[in-house]
Image (tube, rainbow, N blue to C red):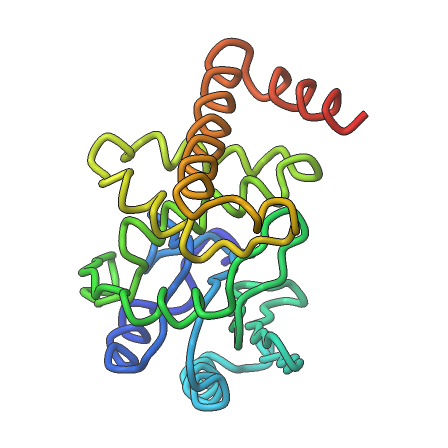
Length: 234
């Protein structure tokens, strides 16, 4: 049973398709999933979403399955536990996560939800429509995830690999312009620069970071990128 799909996510997402939410960094597997997976969601009405998820998951509760809920100020997660192991977790974000290495404006949270698109997905259970980020927002979210966590979690290289897989079809300038718009300016010296200088510097910085990570990865794989980051961190 641990290797089988447990929850019919196609039906679940079809049921909530009119809700203001978005699945961030959506897996290509959706509406399928691997046991132990988590689904990250931005939403406007977390209480309503928690109720919708728990109501749906309750159809699967039996002597082997239970639902665990942890509802904090900034985030909530709902787990379906099967044989004492997480089968599927829904992580609900009530606001933008706080990043240490990059500062995004809080309004980016609502922008991602408002710009989301309904994407048709299908698996063995049937057809479903899942709200996913626009190409530009998906680019930004995956880049931020990579930039924030790579030194601690080398598996985040998957976000650069994902970006690379579709970046030729992406309006890169629009994504970088939006990344600039929603990035805060923490340093006073940086604030004193002209707007044109700020935009040019940010676009150059983000483009260079992505290019370097891709180049290192292709030249020497994950170990090369990890080694480079460790040297920079001292």
